[in-house]
Image (cartoon, rainbow, N blue to C red; front, side, top):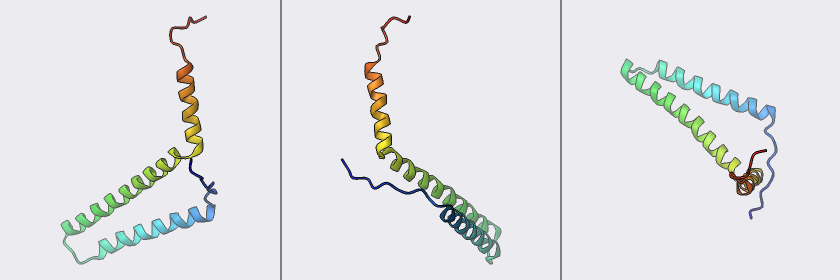
Length: 96
């Protein structure tokens, strides 16, 4: 068994700082792409790359969070309860 350290909830200030940092960096990237001395197709390629990078970052963050939640004690206890209920269930028992 692993010794898990309970994690405190994210504060509102940290959440707001992360959201602002994301918005500023995304906005700066968009402005940078718009003002680069490039052809339209090159600018479009960079824009699509930025879009893909942003969406894959959100996907990665969700996967990491989901994996962490699966390994938490609560998730393992819930899984054990479900397995116990399934093991005790008798589908051939008469319904009253």
